[in-house]
Image (cartoon, rainbow, N blue to C red; front, top):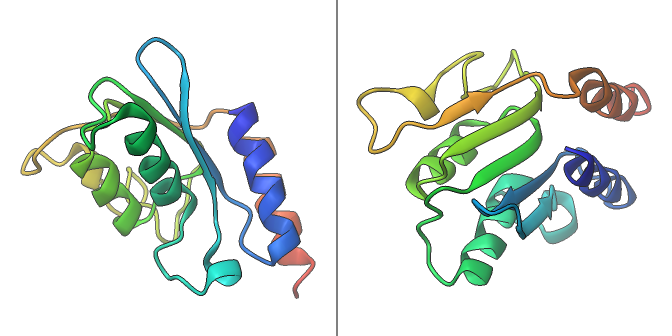
Length: 143
């Protein structure tokens, strides 16, 4: 989670919402990292999770990230939850829950839906206070 938090702080320089993500292989190697870059790139799909998954697939050499873990500072949205299910990620570790748009248990539970192609193990609330504080500080500075 420390690496994901580090990535989140880099997003602050670009005015993007500070969310960071990393993908770790089954043997613990860092395969991909990402931070929100929507504002920076003008790309609505440039969420931290999607960018980390893309980099991980390139590093891993295949799109199936079997056995890998995605670590993210904020509960994924519907798009990102769908991407990690499609990539066959085994485990999702998240920091802060998102009661407005979360799709890993808060508003929706796309990653564990029995109708899906693949169910993901979810470990939530890891360093939640730290992850939440980064987001709260960001939004407070814009109000």
